[in-house]
Image (cartoon, rainbow, N blue to C red; front, side):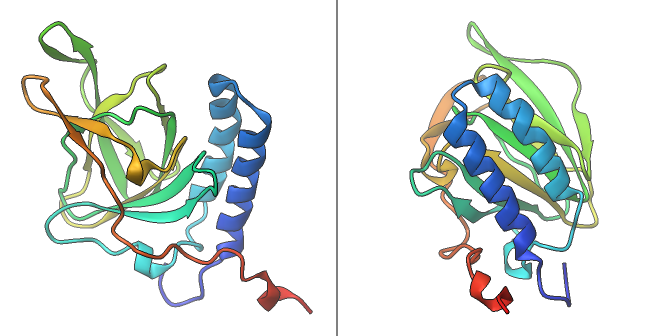
Length: 200
């Protein structure tokens, strides 16, 4: 968003909802099922993401931390894609949900096989408002790209860990893994708790 002040109350409400789910549920399938509409509602509104967490990089996609649970049970990040940018094939090792806020993405899924990786079909497009799950239990390896060559796309990701600190893998064309830790593009997340400003 540009111009108006971001509606951080919307992101705060999402974080509070996910906190309640993580606190009360241990079943991953149930958690993903209940978290999906919460993320769908968040990305249905484009009035809350501060501009500094929506800036592209000319060389590669950026991942900004928006919130990390104090016990690292989940994290929320914005992925900002410059025109035509893409990830390598990679995994996550934890459950996650991806919701497209602006633009569109193209995702191609893979599965391990003896000696490499197999594509699970042609790439599919995720337009604004669409939410997709990833997890070792439902499919964890994919490659994602901005669907647009002339503008940025932004997706909001919810992961079942502090994803910037998780050791996971990039895969080459032969399916050989290389360990990486993604980190974050920002040093400071948005302050969701400045609620005193809204008090009478």
